[in-house]
Length: 171
Ligand code: S3P
Image (cartoon, rainbow, N blue to C red; front, side, top):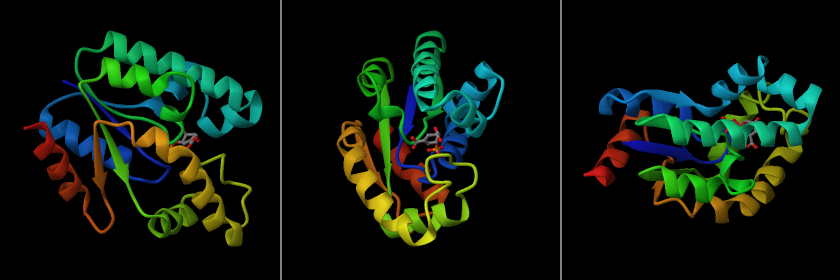
């Protein structure tokens, strides 16, 4: 089975994806890691040295090759993946199920405060502006996330509970 997880930055796509892949006995793929391997440097470096446009192009290319070439997987995408080009349509066509891991703005902001450094899009945003940035950004991105086959609300849930919610939808 081909499963893709989408959602805002810090929504737990990688942690949930890893546990889900073990439970389903599928391979786990983190799209950001696959891009880093393809380009040969970190996401932060790609943004700073080559720019966001280059990153988005690579993101689509690597996404398409994974969807085409791998027979089964749990794929965790980047927060922006479904929002650019035809990425979301491609995922909906090529994956068996796409899950949106949805969290409330306060929970996302709390997590992002401690994880800013590895995320080029929020690195330069001042502490006091982060909530407003996430509110606007999530508002723009939500229509893409909501195209997913399933919407999993994750506030207050452990990784295992989220995995159970996903597995219940796969039955
Ligand atoms: C991005 C999210 C990041 C990474 C890149 C861009 C975004 O992934 O792909 O920094 O546009 O939201 P995470 O969602 O894993 O942080």
